[in-house]
Each structure stands twice: as structure tokens, then as C-alpha cells.
Length: 253
Image (tube, rainbow, N blue to C red; front, side, top):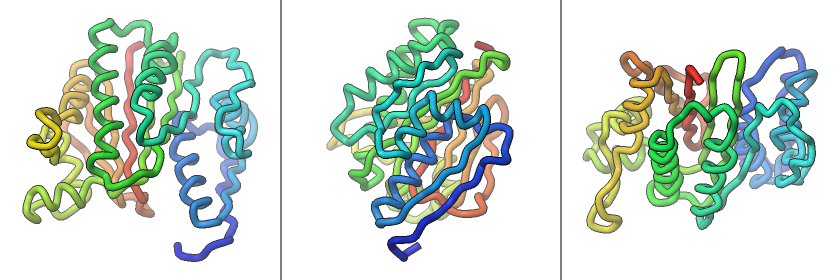
């Protein structure tokens, strides 16, 4: 899409349900379009509209990103937040207070919470070290009490997985799906000489998910991979996403 000044519409008004954690994806699309002087209209209705109002997406779409004045009487939403590259500490506090401090996470032990906070803090930092972007990161979550599921979706607008992995492997990895799988298996593009030891965070999250019946789904470009208790599954999107999405699902909560 190269044209400016256009208006795009996403009409979900006939849908009975959309996972509210996906507000981070919609917010990132809105941000990207506005950077190109375009406009995005998102149509929601019924219960879905009120859920997206409680998590702050409706106010964000109206230009008020920090307005969470609507009470979440169901205590199911985890607010939509937008973080700049230098907001490591606010992001960590968001994880502690809003996500892992949510009633949906009370079954997790302190050790599990600390480990997952460290993992997602590293993912956040990796966006700006490896994805060649200064654009913000978008985060949102949702608790589904009837299912005992807690979901968290983190979105960035960087280069995605393939570019750095392709360079790191000398061209051996040549598809987004292969690059995602490469990272899920514990490989890293981290420059140890420059940033010190680390990396392999996605493998650690995958191992946690395997042990606790969770799953992690990653989108990069036109490909996605889903890793749970079984083998890594991959597939294609109808349209490529300009960036990457990490979607965590915690179950049996």
C-alpha cells in the first residue's frame, strides 16, 4: 500500500466474538496507517464492542490512548498499552501489575511469574535490538474465566524474523516460517560480544508452554508458527503482516 489519504474499514459488526487481546494487532495497524496519513475505521458491535471499550481500544481509536475510564466490572480485560523503545521499566511494570497481577494469573507461582516476566521483557528489548525499528510495541491481554485461559499478544512493526536470521545463517534460512522455527528451537541472532550472553528466550517460553498445556503463536511476514505440547505447526496468512506478533496462551488457570 503506497497511497496516502485513504480510508480503510474493518467491519467486525456481524461477528459474535473476537479475542480482545487482538486489540494490540488492530492498534498497530491503525498506527501504521496513520503514519501514512491514512485512516482506519473498525466497526464492532454488541459484547465485543464493550469488551474493546473496557480494554481501552475504543478510546485509542478515538485518539485517547490512555483513557481507561470505563470500569471493567467483569475483571476480564488486560488493558491495551503502547510502549516506546526507551520504556523498558514501564513495560515490565505493565507485565507485573496488569498481566501477571490480573486475577487470571493467580494460579501461577512466583517463580513462574518471575520467569515469564523476564522472558517477555527480553522479547521487548529484542525488538529494538534486532528488528531494526524505533516504532512502538503494542500489548494487550484477555482472561477467559469459563475456559481458564489467559492470553497476551505483543506486536511490533519491525523487520520480522527472517532478515536477521537469514544474515546470521549465511542464507541457509530463507523463509519466515523457518526463521521462526529456528528461533523457537533456541537459536539466536544476539551479538554476544556486544550485548553479552543471552538469547533463546522463545525456546524457554515454548518449553514452559509444553509443560503447562499452553501455546505460543508467532506471526512474521506472511507466515506463522504455533508451538504447544506437540510439534511446531506452521502455515501461511492470506496477507502478510508488516512486523511480528507473539501470542501467548496460558491454560488450566
